[in-house]
Amino acid sequence: MGDVLRFLHLVTALWFSAGVGLQMVVLAQGARAKDLTVVAFSFGLAQRAQKVFIIPALLVLGLTGGLTMIALGVSGRKVWIMLSVALTLLLLLVDVLYLQPHLAEAEKTAREAVARGKLTPRLSMCVQDRRRGAVSHGMALVLVVIVALMAFQPF
Image 1 (cartoon, rainbow, N blue to C red):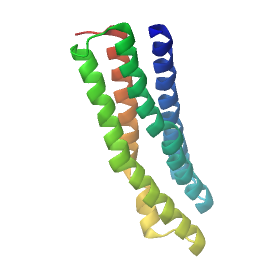
Image 2 (image 1 turned 90 degrees about the vertical axis):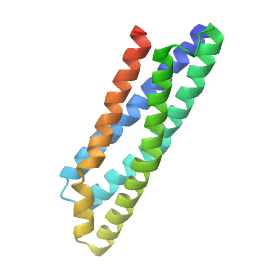
Image 3 (image 1 turned 60 degrees about the vertical axis):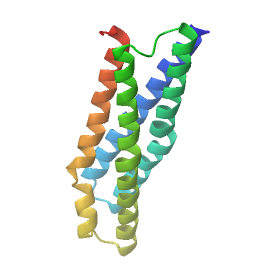
Image 4 (image 1 turned 30 degrees about the horizontal axis):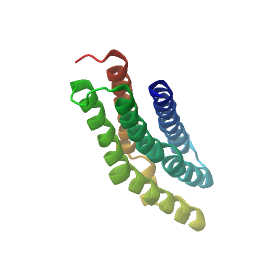
């Protein structure tokens, strides 16, 4: 049973990775687009990636990880496990508290700009916001760290 849970945990990590990758690509393409409908679509698609891939995957990732630990009899007191859990919770908090609301606001702003038929200063500011990209890239980097902790179990 432990091997099945470990496999599900790995598949869930890939599910999360797909969401982060999709979001990064879609937002990068939207930032380069000249057509306002494409910009609005990219923000909407990135927000949907949050709801379909990233947030559910983080929740299932924690569940399958915990069940795998129980099934394999692994102690939760190992530093690499505690660090992995803390980093996963950090990803969830940053995503839910910062990225999701930011994307919702950016999509709303883009839809308003499409309705007006012109680029608004507020949308321009949303498109050029470097923090969103830094957070997305940071999430990908933290995922690599978590995978390394799981693979090498250094301490």
